Length: 393
Image (tube, rainbow, N blue to C red; front, side):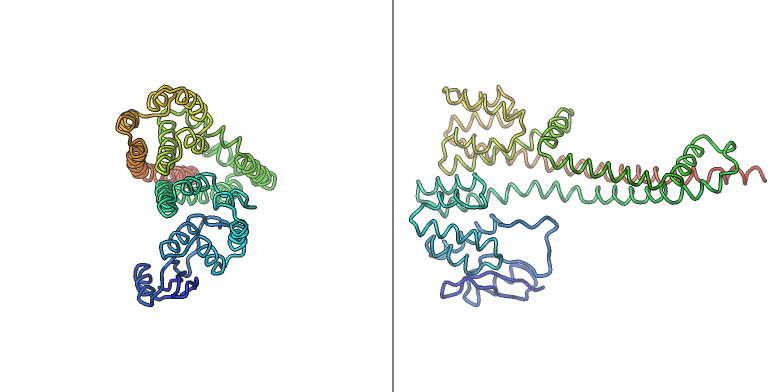
């Protein structure tokens, strides 16, 4: 396999290096043998299934961290990244940062003045690092947070692929049967509608209707699909749907724990970076759904008034039994950031196990349901023929 590596050469220039190797680790080892410092690596011929982003913050953080560890100062590292960038939008953003830095602005201030805003969480991490002078550890914390936060999302996506493929394939076959095969059978049975079994008769009536009004039905289905797509593209509709899903007994509790997991991990990372508790809660507030967000606002007022964080969270539905105990231990020991991270890790493992269990149960149920649906349509279509054959005998 061939990989393309972005590396720093002996002169401090960012270069693109193609390397053939069996794995990405082998490609990185080969580049280091050539005296290069590896910033990032990508296998050629791979494309992301998601929509490409204009600025990859995780990649930028990784490359900036590698350059700073190599001994470059911040300005030199950003200049090297801007010169070596092959994407115009990324180069433009880096040039904006460099202009601000050359005018004497702090890195965090430059980030807030970009034409393409970066996440406030990243800016707050840089701002706290400027106060303590530990930019490299701060970037490492943010990069670790970004990677950990992406793990559970990838597990959910990978677990959803096969069920979605099953549903998609089954839906296409069902639509083919209902939209093409059934109308053809309707013309065969047109001269004996009274002798059909009840369910077969309903299916044939649908075929007759579709054969007569196929264009109108197609336009109606397309209109419904476009309307639903437009509705779900609105944040207010998605938020309302999220609230409805949260009211379901089992699914609602799982969604709540998923949100709290991201919230705990974010707050823990911010506290570990030296950001005050109330400021950290405000920065992580957007990760919660409106209902939990109101609870967080009420809890923040109690914390500001001097109440313990664990108790305030518990009173406003922001904890689980395990998380509450960990938060209490964290407040007593002064290791609240570590305990928030531990709570997030515990619930991530719990969610991963539940996803695995649901996937293993859902896949055979989906296959059975799709098989019964398609088989039922076929049986109903051929049942009159079977009855006719039996009467002839």
